[in-house]
Structures are given as C-alpha cells and as structure tokens.
Length: 449
Ligand code: LLP
Image (cartoon, rainbow, N blue to C red; front, side, top):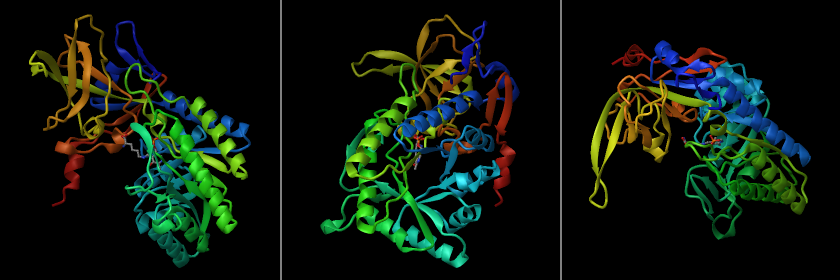
C-alpha cells in the first residue's frame, strides 16, 4: 500500500503503525488493511470515471465489488467515498445492509441465486438485480407476482465474446462458460440469447429493465478489451431498440481493472482507462445514432488489493538442494510461515505471484533465493514462489506479503482446521480490528455431530 514505509531502525510500518507492534498485539497471520489507501483508490476511480464520462455528456456510478473483500467497515468506507456496493450472494448482501448501505445503492449478482437471496434483495429494495438466465428471469418475475409490490429493477448480464485478464482477450463466437447470455446469434441464425433475454424481461410487467451488464474478466492490464466489449453492448442496445422501441438507460461495464502485484509491475491507471473508455463509447454511440446511456463499473481488486498486506511470522527455514534442468544444482531456501493456502489460495489456484519482504528489520546479509511456504500438508502450499530474502532470515522474523487485500480473506478457508486470520485496519497510527481472528473454539462450535 502507499502507506507502507520503513522506520529509522528499518522496521516496516503501514498507516503509521509499526508492524512489530501490530504483530505483538494482534498476532500473526493477520490481514492488514490501510484504510487511507483504500479510500484514496476508491476516490481515484470515482473521480476519474465521473470526470471522463461527464466530459462526453454521460454519467457513471462506481460499484465496489464486495467479492474482493467485504466487511461492515469496508462497505462504509466505500459508501463514504461515494461508491455503491456490488454483492454476489446473500452473505455479501447482509454485510452491506448491516453497514447501512441503502438497498437502492446495492446490486446483486449471481448465476444461481436462491429464492431466499432474491427475496432478501426485494425486501431490501436492492437497486438492481443482475439476471443471468431465462430461468431466473421467469423465477424472479413469478416471485414478484406472488409477493406483490413494485417491479424488480433488472439488468441482463450478457457475454460479448471478449475475455480479458490474465491472458490477452480473445474473441469467441460462442461462450463455453456459465455466466451471462451470449450476444452471438443462436443456432440457424436465431436471435441471440442476450436479445431473447432482454425481450423476456420486457415481456414481464413484474420486471423493470434497467439495462445491460457485461463483465469481461479480472486482473486486466490491457485496456482494449473494455472498449471492444462496450462496442458490442452498445450495438446490442441499439438492436434491442430497433426490435422493440425500448432504448435502455444503463450499461454496466463490469470490473477487472488490474493491479501491480510485484515490484516493477504497472497497474491500470484509472484516469487513462476512464478517458479511453468514455471516448470510445462516445464515438460508438454517435456512429449508432443513439444517445449515451448512464454507465456503471464494478472494480473490486483495484480498490482493495493494493491496500492490503498479509503479515506472517517465520517458523522454519530450510535450504533445499534443487536439481536444475541442466543437471546443475542450486539451493532454494524454504521459508515456512504460520499461514499459507488457507489465507491466500491464489498462488495454488491461479499460479498467482506475490512479493514478500522482511517487515521487522532490514538486513545486509547476502540475499538468498527463497520460497515462502505455508504450514499446510501439501507441497503446493506456496505463498511466494520466488523472492530474494536476506540470508539471515530466521524464525521469529516477520514477513509482509504485499497486495493481498483482494481475494485473500474473501477466499480464505479453514483447511487443516486453521482458524482464519483477522482483518486489522490501520489509520493514522491506530489499529482497529474489523474482523476478529477465528479461534479453534469457533471451529469446534460448528461441529455439532
Ligand atoms: N463484477 C463482476 C460481475 C464480477 O464477476 C467481478 C469479479 C467483479 C465485478 C470484480 O472484478 P475485479 O475488479 O475485482 O477484478 N478470485 C479471482 C477473481 C475472480 C473475479 C470474479 N469476478 C482472483 O482472485 O483473481
């Protein structure tokens, strides 16, 4: 995070809090969240997009994607910075509501929402339910019919053939994945599933069609995909208008803005991407002869990822002699910490790369090639694949792993029955526990057999 610094004695602090003190008070592993950094990033996205879209005569709402990390305090910070909140389950919805976010400022996603989740969303007056299938459209409309009340506000999630993030975006005619409704024509040139779904929403008086939603991927570093997707969505909007006379008011371009995980990597710049996308949609709408809709976006990782780090304590250090391809050997120093794949599954799941630094001191010992591993019972339990650490790294040292704020805690598990770490916010030299550490008693309490 931007609030990470080294003090005079070399120890790392974040948000004015010495990480040695934080470790002593809260224990390790802990997720440390820099509140000021979170707020700065939230504001940067909102202002960049608001200004860029205002410049082309449109407007934009920024929804913080709660799947990246959602706690009551985090939802409040997002709201205080002028963001709305996107949820993807009844659990995320419950946290946002407990935070006091008005229903009207919430969205609910999911390809298989339960009736209970849909009812909760209707009870709370959620501002938009993003529907993902024909079955769901009919189910939601039936639910509204049986309950009475206002029509449910709906966006239709479509797939544009643009997949971005991690790898280059590619265009595919038909989509072999579970999300959304394809804009590509159906079999024998039939109308696209996306257009059919939009019509299905219009056909039900229990539903109010707000617009079209497209999310193309995550950790996107090449901005072109957003423009390609926007072109496809605006074309679909024009096609719907031609077929039905209804020109929808809103288009959501999803999340996916990529961040830097390693030193030297460069994140997407919100100002640049906002200008590029606003300029592109302006040109596209002009060519189509349609006025611009209101836009929304749903960044998660870009807001919270860099604001978080994970603080671990080193337990064991073990040099391992490795046979290289050319029969030469080298030594890799395995540094085991007190967490691992249960608090950060991303390296094991996606091959994600992270950076670790000694947090409690600096050392001028010659660096060694290290691999930071966890304490779980499998060899894929890797926190940081390759990192140079001082050769005197030893038990009791603190390691900080950067940029773990997104999809760390939110994808954490209790594998090997490890209690999940707390989320500790730091700001202006103070700490505040947002989510407390689990205890073994918490885990035992769930076991009622
Ligand atoms: N909106 C929708 C509809 C999404 O599906 C997602 C992410 C987002 C917004 C937020 O995307 P972001 O701005 O955070 O990239 N667990 C994976 C990421 C999965 C993202 C799923 N959808 C990871 O750890 O990389």
